Length: 68
Image 1 (cartoon, rainbow, N blue to C red):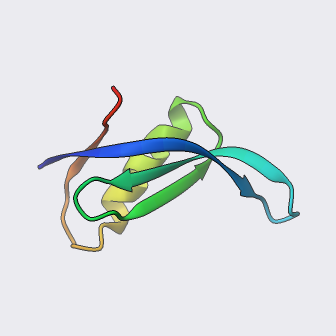
Image 2: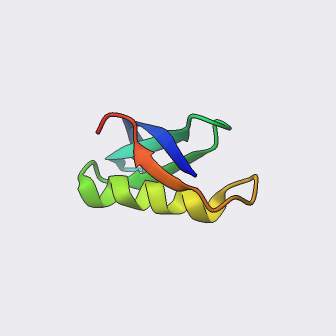
Image 3: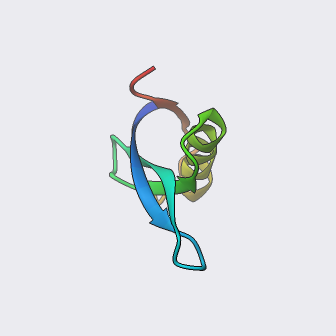
């Protein structure tokens, strides 16, 4: 099933406490969230891949950015 994900830019702290521009993805079906360092396409794709791996419902959905 194709599921839209809302991606927003956030700031995460790394292990040294330094703030890093990052992205956070939220599933529009169940509100599950994933995060990745960086704001580029690779970081966004990583969030989508993590969403599939970590689905709390155990589903194998195809996640897409709702803004694209």
